[in-house]
Length: 122
Image 1 (cartoon, rainbow, N blue to C red):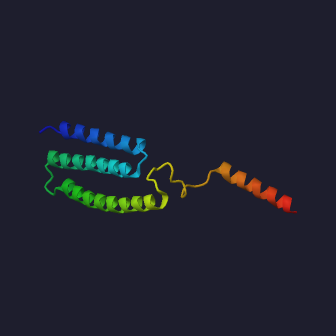
Image 2 (image 1 turned 135 degrees about the vertical axis):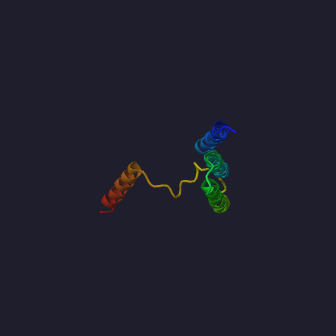
Image 3 (image 1 turned 180 degrees about the horizontal axis):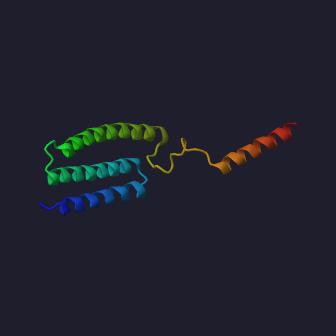
């Protein structure tokens, strides 16, 4: 088997996952896209392990480790998404801005308003 076939398939899977992460707004679809990217990496690891004929099978061992980490990531990520959906009523990533850092312009506007209130009170 040529190395090019699984490598091209892995690139296509990774690009599809990358597009899903960048273009999707639903948190569950973003998690699925991350999982697709991890599986593309796993495919590359196994293909190169077979191609190099590694006696330790390090690529396959690392693939099993990545699968275990990905399962834990999906479990915890899905629990967080469900909790956010219960509290906010949406799983849209763009609408979840409660934990976002405040911009410099917003901080300056808040400081100006606080200064105006202090002058008005005095």
